[in-house]
Length: 410
Image 1: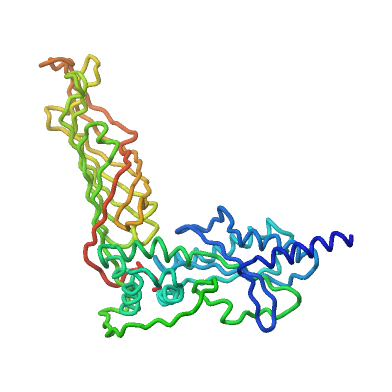
Image 2 (image 1 turned 60 degrees about the vertical axis):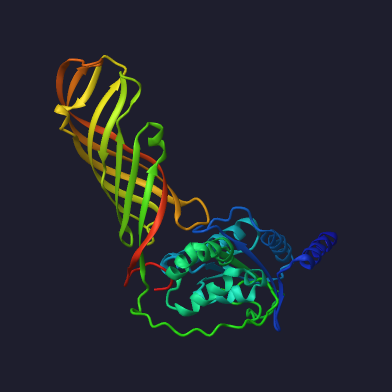
């Protein structure tokens, strides 16, 4: 028994001596670790080295009955709607609690949870107090725009220098605010951290403070106290359709937060190397879309109409063409899809979607040969997959609209 206690105590001393986030206050001994997350994620994939170390320390402290309490704070960056960021910060805190309880002998009744959504001013302080960030050529302009547009600098940051500032923030700065922080109190001391040890919403790792000379900028009077909503236009092309020799393009425009209108156009006037094999079409498929996210990204659901002129031959005995060449198929259906970034450039996306619908068909049947005779006429109803796309998307800004829900804090 005595040897087990000595081994446990040795583990505490060895691991504690190498932990970079051991914090001391006037009245308490604490241990601290930070776990970072991907954008819009609250899942702990690979645990950070700090978190792994603190789990070992927690088990050792618990066996020695030295643990008093844990504080876990989930944090979110300011980009995006405040309500979603607040929910994300709370889920990060709750997920970290579940992770610690599952991986240690710590009882959950000594764990306190809190959450915090960093403000744009917090982000500016982070840039100023972190030497590696403050050395970037983008730092001064980012801090200036945050200072000028205090209510909601998101749109200005997105547009500045063709998106360069926003790309830098997305790759180097926002990830530092997407985190949860675990603080362990032990040895029966105070449950209070000094303001120098933990700064809400600011980079937690200890970095040397340095004086930053702020530029004097004349304040800009906002025309509306509500944050601006940025409308966008999207130009797209469906990559698999090109493999079928269908030239295609799509236009989409944001109508309001959560809603957009899309219009894809498909055209094919080619034989597939043989007269008896063709899928000639001209199709329009206007669609109204709804997005759970206010910035009209991520998952979406849509309802669409469809109109298709067609002349089809699949190397069989017959060729099928809309009646008299002027009776297109009419119908419509529903679709789901997902739009996501592919690079740090905020204007580049990929989009995948699939949908099904019902169409009324009226077509003629011809012998599948040169100047083949008409041998039949049919009317029927088609139902099935009418949309399958994997598209490359480029987004353009298209003016602003006030009193919207998009951006940072409402």
